[in-house]
Length: 164
Image (cartoon, rainbow, N blue to C red; front, side, top):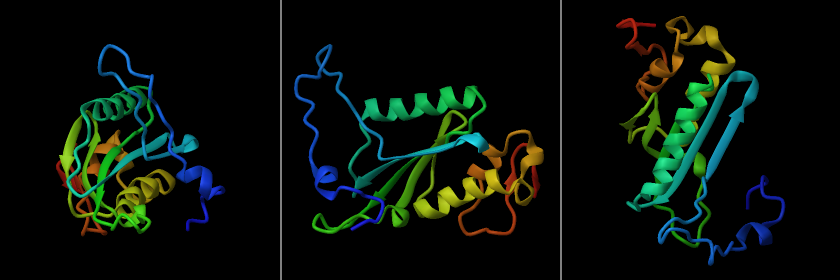
């Protein structure tokens, strides 16, 4: 059991949203992961799905809209979809889930290589240690999001078409 869960029984308790459907098909949704680094102008959001479960259209739009609104106000907000194949009777270690795709700068990009921990570390390190990454690009989100998962030493900077 996670040390981050304070009340395991409440955490496992299902929330029933029956009666909260409007216009025929509008329903509540949730987001599995949100980290807001307020002083660093960074917010990371993620959804975790099992196997090949699809990301519902409404949930995808919600994540995209949050990212767009935050980024328009100067807060970098990468959003990701990650997957796992953990048996249903075992807890899912989110840090080890594989990034299926991510959304930033108005577009989705397929990944399939990095874990959630690796993905988040690239953004957090860039926000906390700007000298270690491409902050001279005016907008480090493009550089960070295009960084190859296996390349820890340099990243392609599409804004200036050079290595940093």
